[in-house]
Length: 472
Image (cartoon, rainbow, N blue to C red; front, side, top):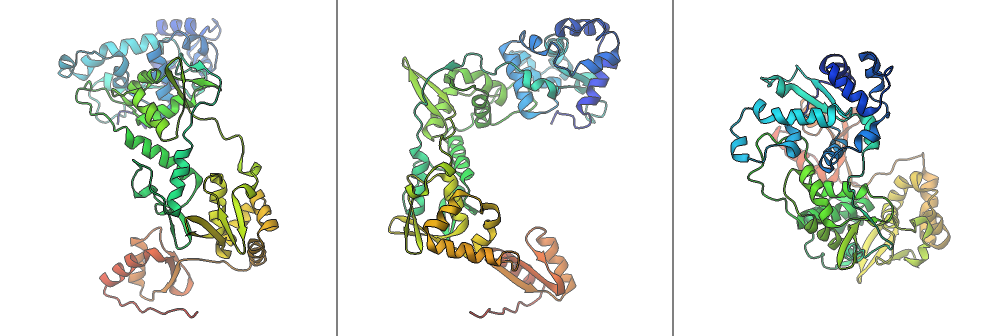
């Protein structure tokens, strides 16, 4: 990686102001930023005033669209870069000739443009890092960084955003269809691998190997979107065109997150950010359409042209939705309507319940163990109050968990073992630095699903396992 990890922003600023900048550079910075004669009278004063917001917005306003895009990438990544990073907008397009030149010759003109367009406008830190171990020339030791104080003053990434009324078309049915996996429904066409499969294991709602969380649905959308638009094969990228890059989905998400309320983008407006952020030729059209197909982006068509944006947050929070609209109480069970349940409410219910799919419906019953784990964090949630008032079985389980709170710890799917041999204990500790909990008197505890791996280590060490079955 070209970024230096040995210099922080303060060190770079000090070196730049006291060693790197010429008097001509200082005059150019003072003019661009609008510093007074007093503010630029000495290098110490320049170092003090440089990180201020004086004149930053005005200087930013003189940048090209490519330069603004590049600074947004530095904001997103927060990295320190070398001069080769800037070749993606200032580099020589004659690739055949470019690749046979030395680093200094390749980037001599790039450095001049960086100095004139960014450093002398007072927008970029520039310093020489002598600690770069593999640098043979001064050109390779130059490092650049966008001051954090300037990040909030960057011009919009997309200057051509359009203000449009309406929420657009959002394929919310995509996520609802995903939830139907829990009751035996088909997986959405083109859905990603088993890591994101929704299923029920021992009464627990899971996505892949993890306990279900509402945020996992967004992760699934992103993964499905990413899989729908494979990364391009780039054979002829300019040699030395290095520095931070981000994945296409991250670049597009960042661009949409910069939009104001009611602002929308044409897909073509993403082509430049994608080229600069990803350093690869990518189609904004393909990415936007795939994002809409997977319910991650909203779309509306104006005069035959599609516009996109991230959907506005749902107007109704789970606390504002009456649980009676998505829950039916039958005896000691709840039947959950997967077409209407808020995703955060489904997560809360899964944390309190044992779950089953019965006759194509998702059915939940109170689980005292899970309630005991969650009650402290959820006791004031409106859903808890509703369950107390309308679901007698949950009220009883909540009262039981509350009465036991602080007096006992309830565990599920946990095994206890006793290890008398010190050598074996050391082997287990090394093999499972995160999976085992060592208790007093030679005992240890670990999750049930870790048993095969523990048995393998014990058998390999030549020891014998004695199993004691619990009663009841």
